[in-house]
Length: 399
Image (tube, rainbow, N blue to C red; front, top):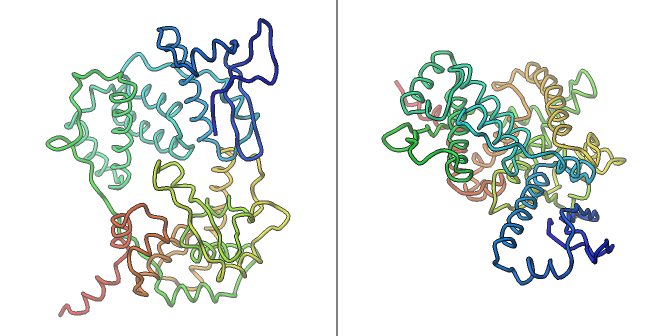
């Protein structure tokens, strides 16, 4: 929790105290001084909410500083008081004075509230692709005609539909941010997205998943070349049986997430993609206990024992990428040994879990709850992209 308080723990000269931002996280409390003021000044500005011009401007400056602290706090993987203080001390980048697209992207990536390292990387890839297509782009260059031209040219270059649409969604987010929030883009700008202009496609790529008998082969597999290969299979199996959570959720999972016969977690992805309807996942441990005994590190607060308490976002993403790559290499060897129809990768565990539930006749609404989806429509689109077996069944009637 982040609040503005008059820190009365120590009185300063002239009957003043520090007006501070107080950060409370679990058992840690930190004070960041903002300015010195007396009790009567504090009462006038913050208690009685005086509406004279100076009081209004001062409250605005304090609230801006508080918002900046909240953005920094939300972007940290684990709260580290020293790192938090250093990040707050760094000067916030000035709002661009031109409409050069690269400058707008850079400001957004550095200052948007709650943006994660992974999202920042996606935005950086988007602006790099746009800049390589036409260097020196400004907002005024972004027209429906430009977007159509970019789309067709990149399709010819072999860029996937989902990648192109992702670039356009990031571009639209930056334009909306400087139109509606920072209000740098003038009202005369002709907005390029929407009906009658350029519409971003709704694309759901077809996913191919293992058959039930193939999943059983993975579970029963014993012909490992090394202990790490067995560890890699166990990690995949844990993700599959734990409602298809992703590897990042397991990497930061702690022993104290286990409550009796269930694991209670919040998915990492939803912490930053949703402002409302953030629900915990309750995962039964019944089919996970044996795997936990094999992969768990009891000496660490984290189940996998790969993270330390004071990790930051960079450390998390780098470790996650490195570990996933190593595990996926071992899973590919298992795929080849079992001659699986679909390569075994960490990311397929989620698809296999959802498909297993669907094959068993579990209602869509319950599958969505287990996957942590925000709405039934999300689950329907997800399951539709997995349903290739229905197509195969239909095609049996072809003469």
